[in-house]
Image (tube, rainbow, N blue to C red; front, side, top):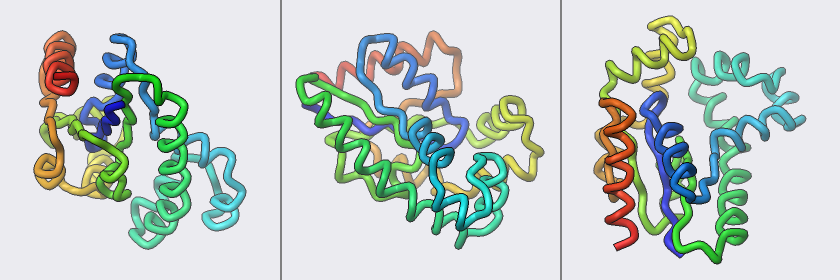
Length: 183
């Protein structure tokens, strides 16, 4: 089984690539959805931060690196274990994907045979965040700057999908990437 990590910075289009992979019949673990569920159910997070509501928590942790680190120290080990379980459950598949927004920040590279990074220019990501999430420009920049730079992640990825075009072109790029993975 080939274990592929799918990652990209906020508003890069990871979810679009994930949807395309599912549409093509691949099993994809979604760490973003899993982390939302963990937040909702965690009494420890609520005790430590005073809330486990995602948007309230985001405003707290993205303005304080120490609080962000504390939150990640709780969530990342749980996500790691879920990814391993996902691989175990899908061991009969030829290739499986795990979509992990903070793959590099969490140090999850060792879980994967290959890593795909979804790239979009910062100005495109900023526009998407403002439109999609109704963020202010300053808050959108805070979220963008909370992650490792795209340039650094590109160096660490096996494949890069440039997502600054139309959806039909993105599908072609995903299919092209799959050819390299299954070759």
